[in-house]
Length: 228
Image (spheres, one colour):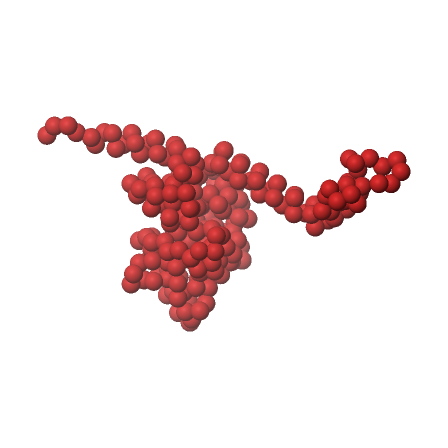
């Protein structure tokens, strides 16, 4: 150890073998640390203060984006609907090809996923209508072409929320919108968790969507009868 240098000094700790790198000098380590911290804060904020649009706000949002007149606004509106109707993550949705849309079986194959395990999500009626309309407008597309033309639409969402005067929500919120809609419709938690790509059989789902679960339970209780 150098004269006058303490073990608490990053440089000395590196020289002494206590640290792999001096985080104050190694920009790669510092950047990675900031990225991890930023993602953790974002996830905590989204789970702690989940903001979802109502059905009416969602419809108005899609129309506001589609009619904004900005370049790729129609593609951005399609992106927003695709995420909401599938529950896919942005990267998962961006990698879906036309060959992955199985109209006969009524499924969409998500090949590129967060955990590396491909999965299928159901082609809901609204999703089928969206894909059929997109396909008719792009009849020259090949099966190997990507369904979504854009890979991001947060700017469009933020601008539309501001114009409509509704609370801002993130693109990831569209994925939560899918989950809440499925739970509210009576789909069991484990199935919804599988569609979303969760590996915990619905434990996280119950924490995030507790408010929807309570509303659903209240509605179900009213249907319980012990006599004719």
